[in-house]
Length: 129
Image (cartoon, rainbow, N blue to C red):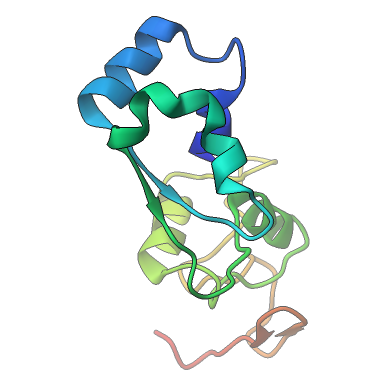
């Protein structure tokens, strides 16, 4: 769910919170494939001068939902997200189900051998140290 969807979903944010967040600070919205930006912004016209839409020039459907799915399936996320993000996931124990982190510092799911091929990202490399 994008932040834009969260902002326009009734009952999630109070009018006071929307005025504070969008009125004082604004927001940047990264366009996603399949989203009608005009429709999404229809309920937020009061803050249209503080909402900046970044047009998607290259199709990219990577999302946190897909990253979690890859990790649950023990697939590499090495080429889907930047190395610092992978490190953050590891350091903060994100997406853990059994108390053990699900990703190592190289973006591979723990238990994934360095030679294992992932349909989504190709063979994981063991040359990154």
